[in-house]
Amino acid sequence: KATVEYTNNTTNVTKEESNLVEVRQKIFHLLRGTPLNVILLNNSKFYHVGTTSEYLFHLTEDEVLRTELGLLSSAFSVNMSEDSSGSCVMYSILDPGCSVGAGSVVEYSRLGAGVSVGGGFII
Image 1 (cartoon, one colour):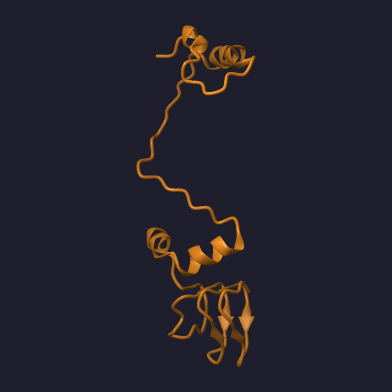
Image 2 (cartoon, rainbow, N blue to C red):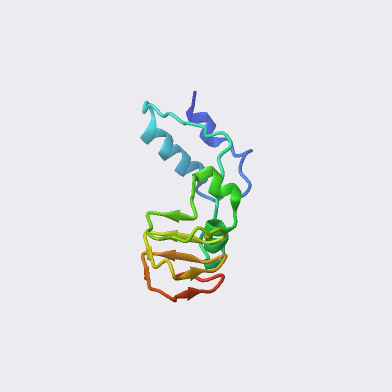
Protein backbone atom coordinates (compact mmCIF):
# COMPACT_ATOMS: atom_id res chain seq x y z
CA LYS A 1 0.00 0.00 0.00
CA ALA A 2 1.31 3.44 -0.93
CA THR A 3 2.20 5.92 1.79
CA VAL A 4 3.12 9.60 1.70
CA GLU A 5 6.49 8.66 3.21
CA TYR A 6 7.33 6.64 0.09
CA THR A 7 7.20 9.81 -2.02
CA ASN A 8 10.42 10.90 -0.26
CA ASN A 9 12.27 7.68 -1.15
CA THR A 10 14.57 8.46 -4.08
CA THR A 11 16.78 5.36 -3.92
CA ASN A 12 15.18 3.95 -7.09
CA VAL A 13 15.77 7.13 -9.12
CA THR A 14 18.69 7.38 -11.55
CA LYS A 15 18.56 11.18 -11.93
CA GLU A 16 16.82 13.20 -9.26
CA GLU A 17 15.24 16.43 -10.44
CA SER A 18 14.85 19.28 -7.95
CA ASN A 19 11.05 19.06 -7.81
CA LEU A 20 10.74 15.24 -7.84
CA VAL A 21 9.50 14.83 -4.26
CA GLU A 22 7.08 17.75 -4.60
CA VAL A 23 5.56 16.31 -7.79
CA ARG A 24 5.35 12.82 -6.27
CA GLN A 25 3.51 14.22 -3.26
CA LYS A 26 1.04 16.13 -5.46
CA ILE A 27 0.33 12.97 -7.46
CA PHE A 28 -0.01 10.94 -4.27
CA HIS A 29 -2.59 13.33 -2.82
CA LEU A 30 -4.53 13.58 -6.11
CA LEU A 31 -4.73 9.79 -6.48
CA ARG A 32 -5.18 8.96 -2.80
CA GLY A 33 -8.05 6.52 -2.38
CA THR A 34 -8.41 5.94 -6.11
CA PRO A 35 -8.50 2.25 -7.01
CA LEU A 36 -5.64 1.54 -9.40
CA ASN A 37 -5.32 -1.76 -11.22
CA VAL A 38 -2.30 -2.78 -13.27
CA ILE A 39 -2.21 -5.64 -15.73
CA LEU A 40 1.17 -7.18 -16.44
CA LEU A 41 1.40 -8.44 -20.00
CA ASN A 42 3.81 -11.35 -20.01
CA ASN A 43 5.96 -11.87 -23.08
CA SER A 44 5.01 -8.52 -24.56
CA LYS A 45 6.98 -7.46 -27.61
CA PHE A 46 7.53 -4.18 -29.39
CA TYR A 47 8.10 -3.98 -33.12
CA HIS A 48 9.24 -0.64 -34.53
CA VAL A 49 7.82 -0.11 -38.01
CA GLY A 50 8.64 3.57 -38.35
CA THR A 51 10.96 3.52 -41.36
CA THR A 52 10.31 2.31 -44.88
CA SER A 53 12.97 -0.38 -44.60
CA GLU A 54 11.42 -1.67 -41.35
CA TYR A 55 7.95 -1.57 -42.95
CA LEU A 56 9.12 -3.61 -45.94
CA PHE A 57 11.04 -6.08 -43.78
CA HIS A 58 8.25 -6.74 -41.28
CA LEU A 59 5.52 -7.15 -43.92
CA THR A 60 7.50 -9.26 -46.39
CA GLU A 61 10.35 -11.07 -44.62
CA ASP A 62 9.83 -11.23 -40.85
CA GLU A 63 8.22 -14.66 -40.46
CA VAL A 64 8.08 -14.35 -36.66
CA LEU A 65 6.00 -11.16 -36.74
CA ARG A 66 3.87 -12.40 -39.64
CA THR A 67 3.08 -15.60 -37.74
CA GLU A 68 2.40 -13.85 -34.41
CA LEU A 69 -0.02 -11.38 -36.01
CA GLY A 70 -1.46 -13.76 -38.60
CA LEU A 71 -0.31 -11.57 -41.50
CA LEU A 72 -0.83 -12.94 -45.01
CA SER A 73 0.96 -12.23 -48.28
CA SER A 74 -2.41 -11.23 -49.73
CA ALA A 75 -5.12 -9.52 -47.69
CA PHE A 76 -8.45 -8.25 -49.06
CA SER A 77 -7.09 -8.32 -52.60
CA VAL A 78 -8.29 -9.69 -55.95
CA ASN A 79 -6.46 -11.74 -58.62
CA MET A 80 -3.22 -12.33 -56.77
CA SER A 81 -0.85 -14.68 -58.56
CA GLU A 82 -0.10 -17.96 -56.85
CA ASP A 83 3.56 -17.01 -56.56
CA SER A 84 3.25 -14.05 -54.21
CA SER A 85 5.74 -15.25 -51.62
CA GLY A 86 8.08 -12.57 -50.38
CA SER A 87 5.68 -9.72 -51.16
CA CYS A 88 2.61 -8.27 -49.46
CA VAL A 89 -0.52 -7.07 -51.27
CA MET A 90 -3.31 -5.42 -49.28
CA TYR A 91 -6.65 -3.97 -50.41
CA SER A 92 -5.64 -4.09 -54.07
CA ILE A 93 -6.83 -5.40 -57.44
CA LEU A 94 -4.12 -6.94 -59.60
CA ASP A 95 -4.53 -8.11 -63.17
CA PRO A 96 -3.42 -11.75 -63.47
CA GLY A 97 -0.75 -10.62 -65.93
CA CYS A 98 1.11 -8.34 -63.51
CA SER A 99 3.91 -9.27 -61.13
CA VAL A 100 5.12 -8.04 -57.75
CA GLY A 101 8.75 -8.60 -56.82
CA ALA A 102 9.98 -10.06 -53.56
CA GLY A 103 10.25 -7.56 -50.72
CA SER A 104 7.60 -5.22 -52.15
CA VAL A 105 4.35 -4.02 -50.59
CA VAL A 106 1.35 -3.00 -52.71
CA GLU A 107 -1.59 -1.41 -50.91
CA TYR A 108 -4.79 0.31 -52.02
CA SER A 109 -3.84 -0.03 -55.69
CA ARG A 110 -5.14 -1.30 -59.01
CA LEU A 111 -2.43 -2.74 -61.26
CA GLY A 112 -3.23 -3.55 -64.87
CA ALA A 113 -1.93 -6.17 -67.30
CA GLY A 114 1.78 -6.11 -67.91
CA VAL A 115 2.61 -4.06 -64.81
CA SER A 116 5.77 -5.27 -63.12
CA VAL A 117 6.75 -4.05 -59.66
CA GLY A 118 10.39 -4.69 -58.83
CA GLY A 119 11.74 -5.86 -55.50
CA GLY A 120 11.80 -3.66 -52.41
CA PHE A 121 9.14 -1.13 -53.45
CA ILE A 122 6.08 0.33 -51.72
CA ILE A 123 3.16 1.07 -54.05
